[in-house]
Image (cartoon, rainbow, N blue to C red; front, side, top):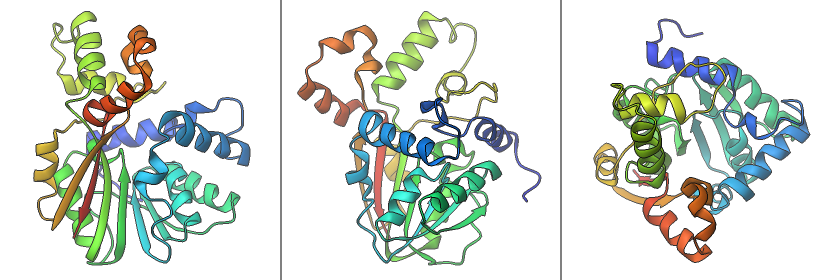
Length: 271
């Protein structure tokens, strides 16, 4: 068990110990049951982010060793395992590791699991063919160090697929800056955009307020500059992000906007 965590990491652990990421999307079934996990996956891949299975490549890594940094409840890790990958999941939060182990076991899949810090991965150089991290590294204090760790544990020719929050997004400007920062006067009260995101981006009943950061495409390319090839795609925009205006946006326009001002920067980085 790790000790001496920084304040930011302690808040992150508190957040996802008390409120496992994504668990609020199913209040009907008991956490840990097959029905619960099925409902979480259904919501994630058909309602919230239907683009995810294809873009993240759940079926692309059969026979490859894959590490997920920040595996949460193991929802994505299960999909990679079903696609034939040899999976390892790590997370800062002990409860997340416990749930992920149970999740894969419920569906008859196997994986290796470890409680650890994304900034200090306990693996030898060139240990994995693929490293995956979705919505995690923008919560750790030294994101650049975490990215260097991804690069270190990847084999030559290996690929990192990473999601970070996008600064030039509707979510950031319309919700964080305009809705909360200006209309709710949180900027006037002296809160920084990062502090506003900490209060509102990650849903929780525990008031732990984890660190949250956003990045531009230029900043992402700098973060991943040690990789040989880096591609960036933008995704994740729903009608709800536009509030009452969302009902007036045609489907094709919403899709085009998603690829320009969506909330997720998807990084494809090859070593």
